[in-house]
Image (tube, rainbow over all chains, first blue to last red):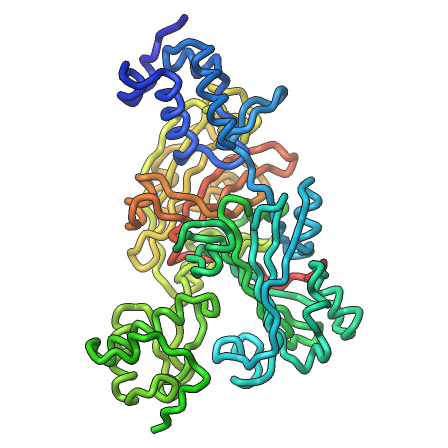
Length: 258
Length: 258
């Protein structure tokens, strides 16, 4: 077996005999995939290459990788090698289309679920009023839905809509994960709607992290939307808190300038 | 002064006499703006409204807000009220255009700076080779640049390009924050390029968080790009690690469906 590691600086624990060899290899691989060169979906070097690089037995490398696969930290595919798993929900944020989250999850081959957490008629706070360009204290409908991918919570979306745009809107209308925009179109005659999206990192609130199964204060992928009707009138202000390990946003191919 | 707080549940510390009143108000406002209803750019209630809601003197409320403004946690504007500051860099991720980061920062009225941190000819790792659709171990150029907004580090971008596409590319070519795509176009005749972008939350590496002035392990806003030339040949794989408090991505108005 090749023991030539001259081109690699190995961390000391890989050479430390007091640590079981497969554990040391796991430490090395974890450090590698959490480093700046690797990201979701990336393939890691083959077991043969790792065995050579680390000067370890190939069966031991296999045992180490098996352990990481069992923990869900890697995925093994017979034809395309061992990879870092992709997030389970890839949300397109193209300028042209924006599918509802149910269809996005389903098109990724997973099972989408949802739950209406909250529905109320309330009054607009200072900041909600500003997003909706209505007077502070105006009546609005506020509702919050939780989305799951294969029964794991991945996203909490909170919508605010001026009440006068959606008279008679009730919790039942939103309980089965119905498309809000479909409902606006079909029942309220609010046609093509457009939105400007902002994506950032934000600490989830205590309620949000608890519902997403994350430690308190965890950073989440935040999406904020202001949706307008075809005449430019604001119809919805929405905040979407996404699980950082399960959700990723992506654009389609775009021209690069600058 | 109105003391009607019947519609608000006040946290106990607002009523606790052992805490200076302005401190208690600051605690209340901080909890409010860090909660799920508020986000960057949002306006908070007026000092008069807060004084009424909390049953406190308006001068004390002003002192509390002054303190938060001095800490940079709020911004006061004589015409549009007091707001949560916006991130200083709003990066458009439209499907049509994507400006270089220098121009994005400048168009926001800030001063852009940059520093070439690293430049080398090296060999493609397994995963870089896969992104660039070249053989593992092929020669590539790898470089890393740090971007600043008003002298504060906001973004670290690491590019990988097959060496045979950019013969003679040297560190000097990239030291003044030059546009890579301009260089590809003008010197190498690589025309219109398109890229697919992925946006996620990821823990920065130790080096990255240190350079961005963040605590180790901080969650950053990660952008990954695969750029192709007009014939679809991959020409660059890029990883961009963005400061979570200074950078936000945004789309222009897009049609909402689903």
